[in-house]
Each structure stands twice: as structure tokens, then as C-alpha cells.
Image: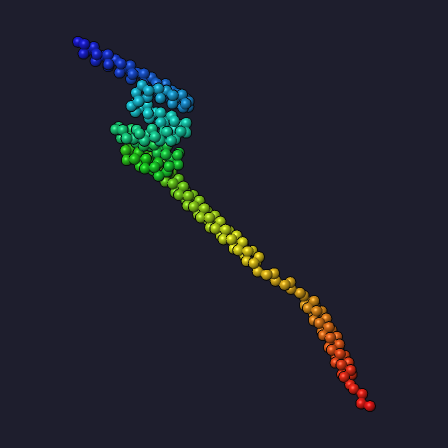
Length: 226
């Protein structure tokens, strides 16, 4: 008799928990439908406080935080749900929402795999088919952008190296010039001609002076013979 009472009490308690959990989920759904995702999130979390294994509470919470653009948390929630045993329809919905969360987080490769899993569980899911192709397109764009960024970086790195080499060569040239003796300034042709003419005149004067000295010397050397 005591055992029977105990069992009844446990069942009554479990029923109370279930009612409380469902009440929070219903309240969350009403807020969600109004677009009040913040309050919906709060109610879903209260439901999970009553029963943290509630698949319905986790799914709805993941959807609410997704709507609040908290894509990292929603991805974590749906990833956890995807590992639980459930029917194909439920799994398809979980993987679809997981793909959406990853897609918004720009994790395109992972989102593609999630949509593939959604289609494995529900091949007729048109939304997952469309999102799969969209994710593939975004992945291609991302890869092209990454390649372009890499090419730009390589080009900038090469330009930087070339500039550094040029600067080093200029510094070396300046150092070499400082070590060399200064070169004489070049003179114009006119100046050279004038200098040459002046040298000729000087040379002529010098020769005339030498001749006079020679003549004078000869005269001084003559002795009178009388």
C-alpha cells in the first residue's frame, strides 16, 4: 500500500512538471508569434529549467535565439539536437535549422553538410534544396574572395620587398659615392677654348722671354779683341 502511494505521488509530480514545462512553451510560442523573440527565449529557458531534456523546448529555444541573430548559440543548440534519436521529420527540421544557423555564421561548408543531412531525412524538402544551392554559391564567392585577398597580400608583400631592396641599393650607392673622391666639375667648350688660348699666349710670352735671355747671354759672352 505504501509503495502504491509513493508511485502515485511520483506520477503526480511528473505530471505537474510536464504541465509546467508545456505552459512555458505555450507562453513562449505566443510571444514568438508576436515577434517578441526575447520573451519567447525567456519562456523556453524556463521550460528547460523544468526539463532540460525537452526536445521541443530546445528546438524552440534554438529558433528564438536564431531570430535574435545569435547564430553561434542556435547552431550549438541544433547541433546537440541532431545527435538525439528522433523521427526523420524532426531530424530534417533540426538539420535544416542547423544549416540556417551555420549559413548566417558564414560557415558555408558546414551548412552545406547540414542541408544534405536534412535532405537525407526528407528528400522532398524544397527549402533545404534551395538553401543548399545558395550555400554552395556563397562558399564559391567566399573562396574567390579569399583567393583575391591572398593575391592582393602577395602583391603587396612583393612590392614591399622590391621597395626595401630599392632603398637598400640607394643607401649603398650613397655610401659608395661618399667613399669616392669628388669628380672635377666639367667645363664648357668655350671655357676650354679660352683657357687653351690663354695658355698659348703665356707660352708665346715665355718663349720670347727665353729667346731674349739667350740673346742677352750671347752678348755678354763676347770678348773684345783689340
